[in-house]
Every structure is written in structure tokens, then in C-alpha cells.
Image 1 (cartoon, helix red, strand yellow):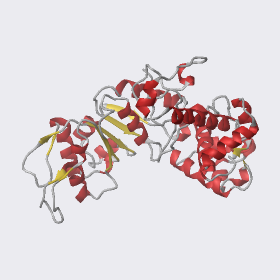
Image 2 (cartoon, helix red, strand yellow):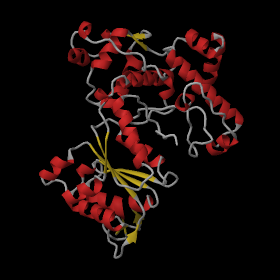
Image 3 (cartoon, helix red, strand yellow):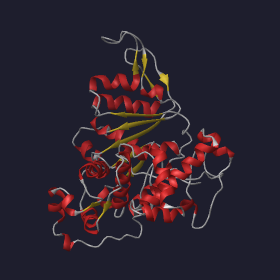
Image 4 (cartoon, helix red, strand yellow):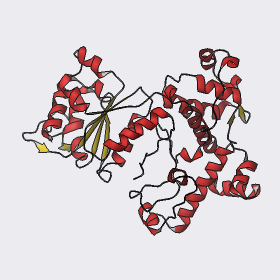
Amino acid sequence: MELNKSGIIGQSTSLVEVFKVLGKVAPTDSTVLVTGESGTGKELLVRALHSNSGRHDKPFVPINCGAIPKELLESELFGHEKGAFTHAIRSRPGRFEVADGGTIFLDEIGEMDLSLQVKILRVLQEKEIERVGGSGCKKVDVRIVAATNRDLETEVAAGRFREDLYYRLNVIPLHLPPLRERGGDVLVLARYFLHHFCSKKKRPVLTLSADTRRVLAAYVWPGNVRELENFMERLSILVDEDIVHPDDLPRKILDQVGDIADLPEVQEDAVETAADCCEEPGKEAFAAAETVKSAEAPEGQLVSTAQQGSGSFVWPDLAVLEVQGLNLKDFLDAVEGRLIDEALIKAEGVKNQAAELLGIKRTTLIEKLKKRSA
């Protein structure tokens, strides 16, 4: 069965290893702990985990444990009864109740207060919760997936995280590699984001000069995919020409990589796989594109001919329209738009070349693009 990557792009060895583990653990109900630096896309990976699980048609409920004051987090997680505290004018279910039957994602769990960690441990062990101000327990059927950018073993040693909770969460560890360890994925993502933001701003798609590609590939990207996405948006606004040169890059990046002449040449063999782009980049997007639905694929999952194998093709059937909620025209428009996007990315925004790839006239391509932006 084809793995639904839910918006993830990447072909680096390190990411392929993550996908292997994801494919094995997703169909189970095992608790998963996702680790990785900030900005690597942990939530996107957890969403992929949920969408490939038997709970995919049930709720996916994320909560950032570091973004909610500890005094309110317990109520957010477990709910409260009327009168449990000031302003509790009515009873309210918590995230665990909302997620019943599905998956709850405890993001940045390393920020959680020790007193609340005890209650999370109880949910893991007993599969039940108690609302704030409540007098009884309620059973919940929830898969718990947690994520953190902290080293929890260090936090345990320092007394800031419960050891028993750590081992209950860390049944299946999934480590998401930082962008600097993903090789050519940097340029795949850079081109995808540039295409997205330039299209959004209705300007010609920027291309990256050879030296610029070498610089971007050599930079360490401390902010990971989030930093790269924001930087590509900045370029789409500030660069006046159609080509991004090293002079357009900030001094911070140029200083970090050193002399451009000393940088290695970029391997371009896998950089331009536009079939790995997605419709919506998302907050921490890696991105992934799909074009036709396989009759063998899980419901709602789309797969590309590239994913099916070289030279193969899977004809869509009427079930595609039903599952996606589309009529024939909308479906054909979506397929056409996907192929146009792929051609533009492969041609690096050069419309003549894109039209050639599609086997149509340049004027026809321009007309189609005008209709899309109208």
C-alpha cells in the first residue's frame, strides 16, 4: 500500500529512513515520540502518521503544550465542569475528549509542568481522564503522539521531566533530521517555495543562478524548513530581476558559507522533481504532489505516476470524483493545473520550455495561466 505522506517532500536518504519507520508504525496504535529541531516539520510528520493509521477518519487534535500557560493547560487537555474555577460558566470538554477515537498530538511536551505530566501518564496507563472540578473518570480511546525539540533524556537527568513518562512516550522514537542533513532537498524546497510565492504575487517565477544554488546548498539553515520558506518569500518580494544571484542573498548567509569558489558543485540529478510539490505549503511544509488516484490506494489518497514506477499509469475511476467531492470538470482542471505547475517548475518558470514539455503552444499556456489567476 502506498504511503500517504500528507504534504511531505524529500528524497534524501535520512528522510527515506523516516518514511520506512512511519510506514511500519502508522497502522498500529503504539505511542510515538517525534524529536527534531524547531522548524523541521514535526507536526506535518505526525499528520502523516495519523492519515496512514486506522484512525484516519477520526479527529486529529494538536495542542502546543508550550504555548498555553500551565494554569490553563490542564483544562485545555482534560476539560472542566461548570464552576470549577472563575469564569467556568459552563462545562467544557477537553482535547482528549474531542480526540476520542482519533489521535491527539502533544507538541513541545518537554515544556509541560511536572504536575501535569503525572496526569498524562495516567491517561497512557488507564485510558481515562478526569475533568477539572469533576468527580468521576471518563474512558477515552485516543492514540497519543508527542513531539519535542528538547533532549528528554537530559531533561530527565535534570529532574525536569518524569522518567516513567519518558519511557511510556518513547515506545517508537521518530527523529526528524534537520534540513542541513537532507542534501538536495534544500533546493527542491527552495524552488517549490519560490514558485509558490511568485505565483501568489503574480510575478514571473524566480530562478536560482548556479552560484546561488551552491550557496543555498552549503548554508546550515539553523531555522530549518521554516527559515527556508520565509527566506524564499522574502526573495519573491525583494529581488527585482528574474534570476536570484548571490548578491541578492543576505550577508549572514554569505559569511557563513565562505568563498563561493570553494563551494562544491551541486548535484542536480534529483533536484527538479516537481512531482514532489504540494498544493498548500503549510506552516512547516516539506510538500508533496499527487496527480491520479489508484484503485488500490487507500480512500482519498492520490498517487503520481512517478510513485507508481517508470512508464506505468493508473487510470482514475468514478470513485475519485466521489471521494474528492469533485465533478468531472473540476477534476480535469485540477489535473491540468498540477501538470502545468510541474512543467513550470521543471522549466524554472520559462514559459516557452514549459509549453514544450506540455506539448502546447506558449500562447495556449499563457491563456490557461490567465484563467487560473482570474
